[in-house]
Image 1 (spheres, chains in turn brown, yellow):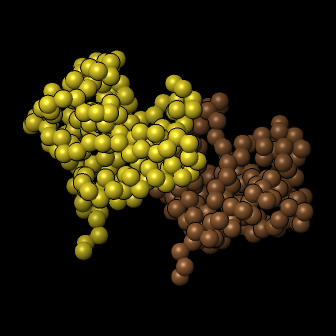
Image 2 (cartoon, rainbow over the protein chains, first blue to last red; image 1 turned 45 degrees about the vertical axis):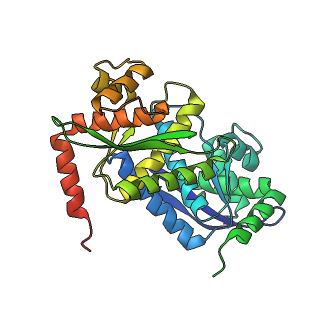
Amino acid sequence: MTRCGVGVVDGAPGRPLTMVACGVVRTPAEEDVPLRLLKIEQGIEEWLDAHAPDLVAIERVFAQHNVRTVMGTAQASAVAMLCATRRGIPVTLHTPSEVKAAVSGSGRAEKAQVGAMVTRILRLDAPPRPADAADALALAICHIWRGTANNRIAAALSRAREPRP
Amino acid sequence: MTRCGVGVVDGAPGRPLTMVACGVVRTPAEEDVPLRLLKIEQGIEEWLDAHAPDLVAIERVFAQHNVRTVMGTAQASAVAMLCATRRGIPVTLHTPSEVKAAVSGSGRAEKAQVGAMVTRILRLDAPPRPADAADALALAICHIWRGTANNRIAAALSRAREPRP
């Protein structure tokens, strides 16, 4: 809820991936949850407006860690799912372990290792900051690499559903 | 996520309360979460359009029970918060114990007892069905009875913020 990482990656499996943009949607910790969710929605809408992604990947949340944090993450991810689905963009969820394994080969990789691999895969000069933005890019990389045929089918179906102008 | 109870109650503390409407927003358990959240949003928007409430009360979710259920409830409640806040309607959260205590005098009241008290308070012929709808009415009653001055202030502020036609 405090820092919702966002990353935009262009590419396809077997081809070099390119970072288009990354950043975070921030909301003040002292504000009420309903208002924070509204600000997250507005922030995500701006990212979707700016980049019009074909596919959206979101972290799958598990309630195994800190209870308060997990509830906030679940609610923020619900908002992200809603924003993408409302536009007819296919949404896929990946667990943090799946993301770590996709970019580093290990589902238990440290945060710094994920940042280093994101930097290498996207041929950046330095690890993206803050770490939440790097995590979001890792999620996008994971999605492109895992998706292949499924992604293409989902994107094609989504385009077919779009209302004609 | 499967049955999101909705209840609309009219009234003020110290005066008889009236049930305006109640029901549930349903989503199919076999559908993907993003699509279910979208359907919940559409369902809640219809309720807000139909009744234009001054205030919205939503259950405060705790992660102490079944993990899967709680995540779904947290996400559905995030959607409800978003829909109300987007319209400038003040949102308040109450825990299930607060709601039970408000209508029955005990924070550990059984579901049937809550249903019976909702029936009595709203002078209905029979307990509202399904139980999720009765729970939503109990939440609305709790909110009206707890709110008093705070509710009036929040509603006035909200009206003052509305753009003039």
